[in-house]
Length: 310
Image (cartoon, rainbow, N blue to C red; front, side):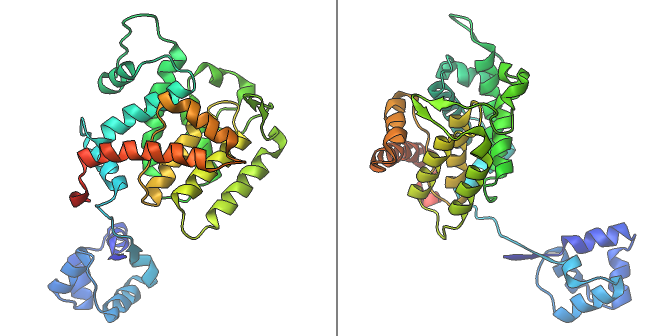
């Protein structure tokens, strides 16, 4: 944890009090003022004097901020996003996650078309015409991944899950159907293959129960995240888009708990579906499929960020 006095200088600015005026009024040294500016520790007597001068409490002028761990994948992804780095781990993850997750759900766009949309912000159709929804959901997935990075270290909540769905489905043909309920839970029953899912009236309660039980775990493991994914897909809380939302949750939670994330390859979707279907009887099949996907992502990660740099 690191001390921050940023609120102090905000208060000074709001009250039109200069740093020089503060220093001279309290007779503090230039060195002490410099420490405050650099968020370095100072004597508690200084904090008390400042609070008396400004008629406020210590908590109003100083906060504790968690230091950023620059060795994590989350930091690397955020940094590459911030500087708009081309060709790095963020760039490749955006394309591969959007392509595979959408293709599993029936998108006809190729990986090259997905890459073209991401890299040029234009549409390249060389053979048969592309469906507008496929294009929109690809663009939406890029934006949703960025939103996921922004909240990756936050506690997983219903609001985050619903926001994933809202971003993924905005401006699609589904979003024009009032009953589809974009960004909120389903209003009509649905099935996964020949399996029934949670009825609409029970979805909210079941999602809240799932989140509560998940958050009670002290140390989230790879298996915990995969198990959460199974139960989330079993509930199937949205009218459509559950798989994509669920796989973004996986990526988010892996980043939050400093676990190497993974991308389910569309060529392995039958193994993935079988793992979900049989999870209630045999957890190992889905876990092994996800571990295999994790190994593949580790290879890409090692290329871009060797272990000696992490």
